[in-house]
Image (cartoon, rainbow, N blue to C red):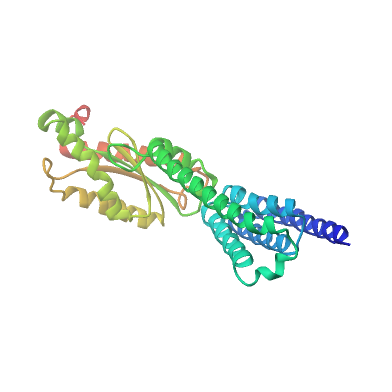
Length: 304
């Protein structure tokens, strides 16, 4: 009878798992509900893996199922959900094996299993979580190094290009502003490259002050930056002008006043353009603004 009962349990749980994977797969691939898919599948797996060891299934399968949890939960569902599952099952093992509730399962398993399994599982879970957190930490550090501009601390061109090529960035209120510093060459020639570096490094401060801290700011190279935001065209233009005003009032160690050229393009005005097209359009507007600045100043454009 036990063999039939355990075989039936295995069949039912396997069907539940297959159905769960199919449902959550459709939810993620068709409806793009990745987070909901992960949460639902985590609950299904948690329920199945809770029932199986409590039911008194074969000790080998109980060990296999529970010891697999620390190994795949974090890689499948991410750090938060995975660690949550590990904590839950660690508490479950402690309650089942080290509280009076162990009388419920003591008749289902051998004494040797009752003594060794909880220690093995807790050690395995702790090790898996430590390794996962270590990998996550080094991944974030490496990603930060790959996508961060060393000089200014904002994102670099690589991240900006990857970001605007991502489908999730495409929204009807997407705006891209391209920023360039005026007079950098003259500053380098007259005040030195340290002063020129100051011109470049303070641009993100003005951008955050005008556009907010949550927007994407990237240094594209040299003295050129880009800001990705979600606004109406009118609001984006106002923020760009506010940024230019903040920059002009700058009082730094070596530089008094920073003058910026800015071009902004928004999908609300260019509905047929891709993010790359918006970027190119904003870049064109930035050069028009730069030309107007130098015409007004009567400067030789070659002396940027």
